[in-house]
Length: 250
Image (tube, rainbow, N blue to C red; front, side):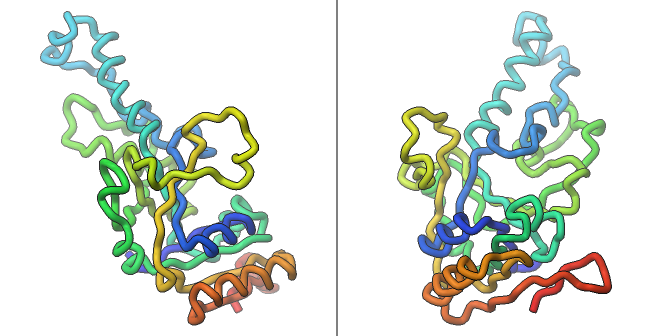
């Protein structure tokens, strides 16, 4: 896997990331895909006699108890989503309607800034998402599987075009949690709406790509921020290839 990964952002997200020089992690329950990190990715239904015996031979209780741990995993994991590509038409459309930014990050440099004290479990290197057919669920009681990793890094094949790579923090320390600007005026919100942020160095920001429809004023503002953070950052403008359904970086 390349040491370069990409983060698609709208203008506000890009400003925050460049101004504060950080990576944002989002709670796993807050993603737009309702199947993301869902306990239902794993088959808890085929309870073995050994496990059933622990719960007084009540398989329904066994299933509920065993699967509840994975519901907790989903609620306690904060994830940073990156991509292996910067020129995906769909990704530009999803995240910023081609009006925003894609940042190229040197993950070898990023890894140096991620510390284990950020949470109970932390990944310093990105791990590729595995795109699968949910019909082939692993059996919780029989299969030899790292079920936590399976839950965090499994998505439906419908998302395969994203070529996603993830970092996660499990139960992040409150020291690294903060509100987004628009959240400061809210009087009530779910704690899972709060993002976790990891401070990274300026050398992590290797490249910057502007969307085809980026506003000129936004482009100027982002360019100044990026050059201030890393004078050597490579800046490109995405353009629509007139001869094919693809994007070109110039």
